[in-house]
Image 1: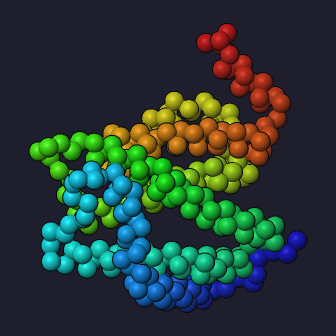
Image 2: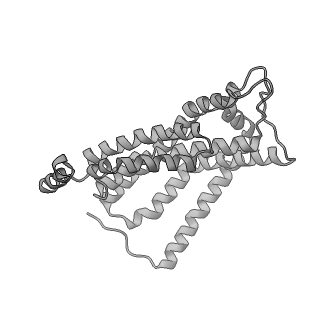
Image 3: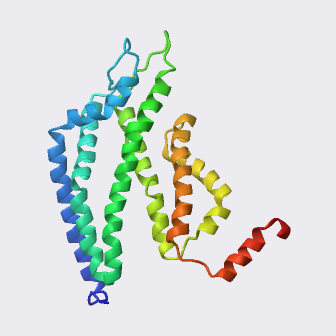
Length: 260
């Protein structure tokens, strides 16, 4: 088993990090330029769930209330598109930076983890776009009446959509994080089971922080979080380090009704 590469001075690590960050910044810049040429199509695609939810006889366009708002919206859309296009370069630079400090068996784990984390994040964002967006926007649009009509600004919509997509991308990483911690022996299924009631409370608090301030969207985020938590319990059970039989019997006695 080969070990990490020869140790580098701290200043050389900083220089290496600086070079990697510059490459990532250049990749994001190139992606930004490419995305800017398609900014209107990207934003139109992002708006589709909202436009389908708005009343057909209503105002099916977004508005902007400041002279620079539409321009800044397209800049933000182009930046997000640039980051998305630069993800392969960013992941490669991350790999090249950390790989020399890892053992060979650790490198074998890191590569699939990076790939799976990307897939899980994209899966979470897709869930937010395909499932949460349509139901969420339909729910909010249902409050429109003869006297109340939705007139949504580009700034507010982009902020709402970005927060939700990133939030759902991050929460879908939970099973992968659990797998990583379980393989290290830092998390066990029995612990997750005992802490379930506290986890439910934390899940709703996290949902309230990550989502816009409305109960419906918080519930839409909390439900998949609860499902992912239960998945994490089973992942920790099947892939985590097994506890000695004596330890399991002691914990079973502690949690049994007779011990109460």
